[in-house]
Image 1: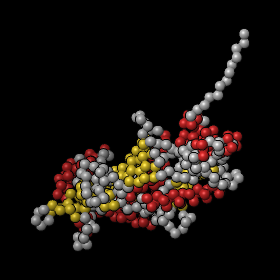
Image 2: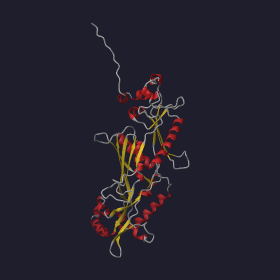
Image 3: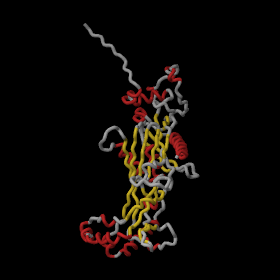
Image 4: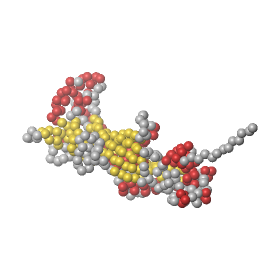
Length: 410
C-alpha cells in the first residue's frame, strides 16, 4: 500500500524570517514601499541627547565638584531604542628626558627641546602630528561577558582613527601649563598658575619636563538594534564637548624631598632603563580648578546610508496587499527614483536590513563652513549593490540635513 505525503506550507513570523532569510524579508518589504522597521526609506531615528551627567562628572557645569569621581566628561543619548553612555577619563604623560642629558645638563636639554618645537612649528599646520585623539573602548551589552567582539574592536579603532583624521583635537589643547604650589609671605600655602596674572614672574614656571593629558573613552551600548557607529560617534562628540580638564601644579614644598629620594636610585634606573615612579609624584591635579577642553570643530557628525537594489524576483505585487487593513494604516514610501538607481535607507535597523545591506556610504560633512561642499570624510563600502554618482550625491545631501538637525539638538 503506497503512502501519501502531503506538503504543508510553513509560515514564519517577521522576526524569524528576518534572521533566516534577511534578503527575502527586506526585498518583500521594499517592493511595497515599506521597511521592516516601518520607517520610510529616508527617515532617521529619533535622537534624544543628554549632554552632561553632572551626577557622575568630577567637575560639574555649575562649577561644583564631586571628589569621588574620576570622570572628566560624559554624555547619554538615545537613538531609537538604543541607549548609549559615554564617559571620558584621563591621565597625563611626561615628555621623558634622555637620562644622561637630564642629569648632567638640564639647560642643554631645554635647547634640544626648543629646537624640536621649532621644527614642529615649521611643519604644515594641518599635519596629523599636530593633533591628538582619544582611546575609546566600546562595550555592547549582550547579557554575557567575555572577550570583546570583532564589531567592538573595529568600531573602537574606527572612532580612534576618524577622530584623529578629522583634526578635531589639537595637540595644544592637551598640553599642561604647570602651576606652582608654594607659600606666601605669611607662610600660607597657595597655588599660582601662569595664566592667572600678568604680574607673576614667568621664570617661576620654567620646569625641565613637559606634560600633556591623554584621554580615554568608555562607551556602553544597550539595546543594540543595528549598526552603532553613528550613535557611538555622536555620544563621543557630546562627551568631549562637556569635558573639563583639571589644572595641574608642581608641589614646590615636597619637591626637594622627592628629588633626594629619586637621586638615590637614579644610577640604577639608568642602568636598568627603569623609570622611577617617585620622580613624578610631585605633579598633582588641582581638586577644584578646571578648564574646558578646546576643540577645533565640535559639530561633526557621521551619517551612514545603506544602498540596496530592488530585486524583482522577490517582489510582492501591491495589489496583493493594498486591501489589507494593516497595510492601509502604514505610511507607504512613494519616493520616486530613477531606473537603475539603488534605494537609499537611512539609519539601518533590524536583522533584515543589517544583514542584507552590504553597500553603504558613510559621510562626515562640515556644516560650519560657508562652503556647502566641504566634507571631512566620505567612505564608500561596496557590498554588491551598484553605487552610482547620483546615489552618492543624495547620500551627502541627507548627511548634511542630519548634521544640521543634530547640531540644533546638541
